[in-house]
Amino acid sequence: MNSDVKIKITGFQMLYEDSTLDKDNKVTINTISRGAYCFKNHKHYIKFDEKYDESDKNSIVHNTLIINKDSFQILKTGYIRSRLSFTEGERYASSLVTPVGSLYMLADTRQVTTHFEEGIIKVTVTYDLSLNDSRVSLIYLEILIEDLRAIK
Image (cartoon, rainbow, N blue to C red; front, side, top):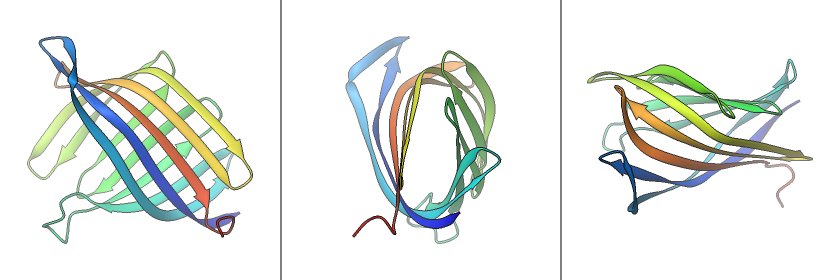
């Protein structure tokens, strides 16, 4: 089944300062996009585009979310490229390729939950993010995918 979906991503990022989590240094995450959904090979695929830099009309990033019952992946192509995979208790190493260079990334997943019901998928993930071997932030994301046919 293919359908149009609304993707709402909310959460926060807390930065580490000298290896200590700075709870006063919190950045809020809140985005809403439209995209496409399909179910294939026992996995849920959601594709959507976003602009990386509002001042640059060519800074389009193509995102693919791949969700199954106990893990979650984010693939980015286009203006920037990366792949992150989240399975509770596991670490995933990758690279973030940007127009100004590449960074080594490590996602250390603390928690992942997935919830599926008719017309709705909800994913939550909490992970520590390291860039170039330095722990930079704790990130909590809640991703809600809603079938637009079910929204009246």
